[in-house]
Length: 481
Ligand code: NAD
Image 1 (cartoon, rainbow, N blue to C red):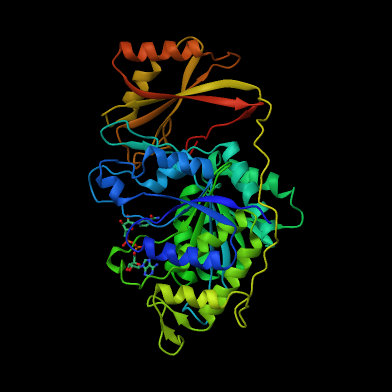
Image 2: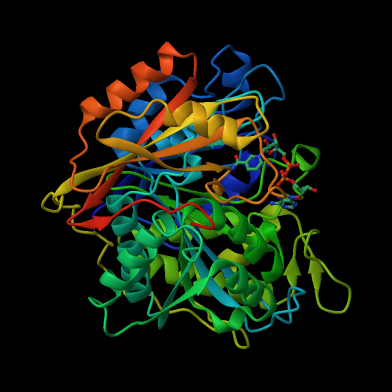
């Protein structure tokens, strides 16, 4: 008798309960070895006064079972309700978001009949760390944080996923020609880890041309790994051009816990009418089955589902005269998939998943610390003047014996010395100070600089230290420097 896996299930709102019942009936009929704890999340919980949409005790159940199959929920408008998806991802450290996007041509309309890609999106950091500040009247900022552990975990996940699912190539998308530190690190880690997987082809594309190519010729790609923001945008594009956002499932994977879902919402207008397509959630459940080591069941369900789509048994959202043979409701669709269990599609490509092993990654190990040397400091100043030479005069007077003004930028563009009068300037200025030749900069110099600025009412809004690691400067130059 094979091991049972206890999972947490939430039926959610709107069409959630119907598509969850359909999904569970299919995977149980296929022999899924699961036991279920059900929890309540979403609208009712929000409206009962819990702004996170989930009760404390439900977190305990999710954390105990570690595997969570979640139907879509309705987030009430207004009232400061927090997105449960974002909260779950962050609380449980679900760092990887996996979205397979496969076209089902000619049974579901798409311009890309050969498309079969998987987007692996980093899920926790980048601009989504949510660290934002207003600094001056005119300027707000959002910190883009990219970490080595974050990059290593997601990139390794992409290669391991490729291996587990027999995929041939992993592509990395970044914009490291512009963001040399942040996206540069992501790309660098990708190149380092790719070497450990000689059986899998790897390549890197700059995101803009990569995205254009993906939208035009998706069959050129297999697995694509990318930082959070790009992944968020492009995974929706990929799902849409594959045929329908309503058919896509998604996995959110962490070191200990994982959550599986459909990518669509709760479609409240379709609720309670036995109309909704359960395919998106079913795709999430299939990812769950391989994740818990039940790839045999996952394969059986996926092939039966492909056969059902191929038979033309379609819910209203994908029904097309001439292609579809039967318009069915949620329950009837599930029954058709169950009838097809054990069968393979004839025209669509049947799947074969390697069985048994769950995908486990080595825990991140911190690398030895590099030699870190302070090489300068950027003072960010809120200043309402127009002529940068006036600001330069003010801040040059702050110089101590060992440190001098190196340049001033506005929104990253060098405006002093030798700026262009055409450059548009805001009230947000960066004044970069460097030590004089042969001098060593210390934190005391920075404190002295800040005190001198305060004494003459220069409004310093923040400082950023400039470091070199193992002798390599690790900060960007001013544009035009
Ligand atoms: P939606 O995805 O619920 O619906 C968009 C359109 O797609 C609708 O026309 C709907 O009828 C159709 N549709 C969606 N899923 C379908 C299915 N399985 N079968 C047939 N048709 C389907 O998006 P929305 O209307 O913008 O959002 C509705 C609610 O869902 C909102 O409260 C939103 O916050 C929530 N939402 C939740 C999640 C989640 O829980 N993961 C994700 C997105 C939106």
